[in-house]
Length: 284
Image (cartoon, rainbow, N blue to C red; front, side, top):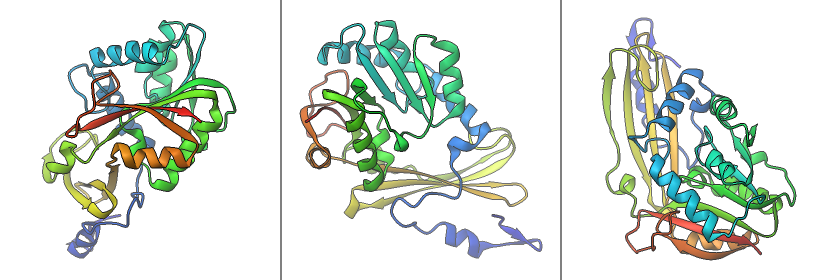
């Protein structure tokens, strides 16, 4: 899409792009498919000083240790890590003796994970298409991945997870709650990047806006990236804000029982003002 036509700036096109889209409508571009952005995401995943793409190493360490204890996972147990990225959790589980499989949609992240973790098996795939039966003692989906999905896609993932688990197997994941900062302090604004940035390797303008779909407990971060030649690319990051009650209802409808709710996946107690909730569920 281009904002310049016959040397004129097409403000009508820009105004149309700035309108809130239908709930969970995908953007015109998926940043996971862009080789340049995929490399920036990998850098963000591996940066120990930021939580832009993954949690800090010390938090990941605590999460893995706590989950091993909470789920009583013994060496040899089979674990599936969905949305594994570059294998930050997967590798740590494998180092503790688990038989681990990681799945991620980013080919760049999977390549890094394979290069740095020979113990685990990594699959480059969309976990919406998960088709494994009675293979795992536990499945993890960490850092709010389930919150970016529509209800339909969420239920598809839950059905796939249930098939993948052995009887009584664990499903552990975390969710953003209505108290999350992004909902209270929406990230909107604009910035001019004169060189390489996160979205593009050359100069560009980024228009960001937050849309609140309050009746659906959902928010949208939308980014319009405009290059020198007028080319505009649209990116969207959806986020569903769940309560323990609403995610519990979705889990029960797909054959899970909720065993416990925490404030995170290190065992912190859940509070009414928690920004995150860690969910420990089991295949019913």
